Length: 343
Image (cartoon, rainbow, N blue to C red):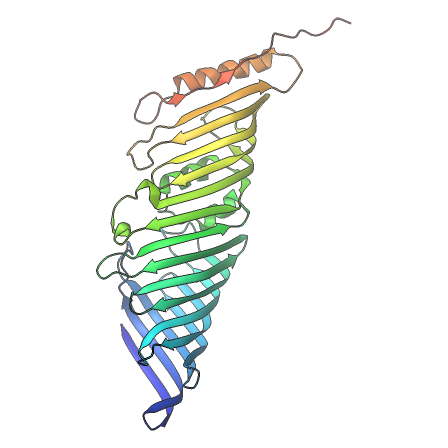
């Protein structure tokens, strides 16, 4: 990393009273846990001020241009010192706008974000970053989160984070969902869920130091609760889609599960549904599907009986990609055939 700095300063004895500064930087920044190597920074330009009386640094204007990310920023930092006048803590607030992301292989397509705001502090003794509040908004996306990050030498940081994503359409969410993150679940949703709304999505992340350097995550590293409403889903190829689906999905470090409170499959009203993928990290994952179905139409039964037989056969005979039988169950109890009344 190459850094250029210019400044004008005012001193009283050995004490710095105030300063105006400009900083420019470019090069590569090593950040543990980045899958594609160091972060390449094309250009950073910051102008700001320091006030010695309050020990405050103000960033009046900043521009960031790196591989895949451009943004404008402003911010402030308060320097906190102990009784020996040694820097012990940095409290900061930063705002970014005009955020543009272009990361092929990470994001589905280029994105623009309206704003990112972060408030927190850094403890110098423990090298711990505490994010009291982070807010991100752009398009239909709105995220609020908090986190603690423990910076570790020569390995990825420890991260404990929690937050919430406001209601958003499934198709919109996939635009913001990083392609490598829970790739199997993301790919299935992209192929098989053409409509619906999720949210508010609540997430908890627990990653010890070095965990992001590993090829897989333990089950307790991640817990995401995803309420689903009004969704359409292609759960088995060739059958009618689930429609008007309502339920809650749960994603952990190794598993995916969904409880379906209500949905429709053609003339069937579905309830007490459950979908489970017990090992997302397996080379070929087997899923389990079960549900209860009831007729909701009082019309003729023969078309419905055909639909029920078709569904039962598919669930009995469906195989996974590795040719092992899918563990699927579907309880159907059609009523007795109702013939048309004679006139």
